[in-house]
Length: 118
Image 1 (tube, one colour):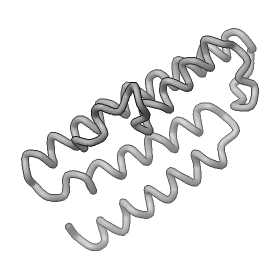
Image 2 (image 1 turned 90 degrees about the horizontal axis):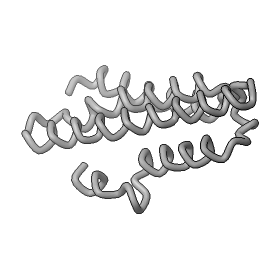
Image 3 (image 1 turned 180 degrees about the vertical axis):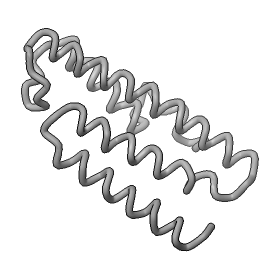
Image 4 (image 1 turned 90 degrees about the vertical axis):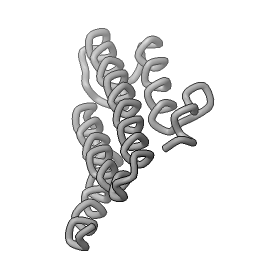
């Protein structure tokens, strides 16, 4: 892999993490998570081995499903509270979906089957 491309993807990872941590709005947090996802996929699949490509596809599919749950959670919360603020997570369904999305993204116990293969 080109050193400039590797540097660009590493800087994108840092940018996505910074955006996610510093966000106070659900959409900016989601955008930071998507920047991280799109920056890590080329780093996973840089060796053109079929197992690396399979791992990158599994990673993308799980992260896309978790991002969808995160957006759905924020939409339910905004529907019930009228706010898109991260600190106003009051609805129980929204809290459950957000916890599920974060558990999927981190590969925690009920959603950990994809993690060792990637």
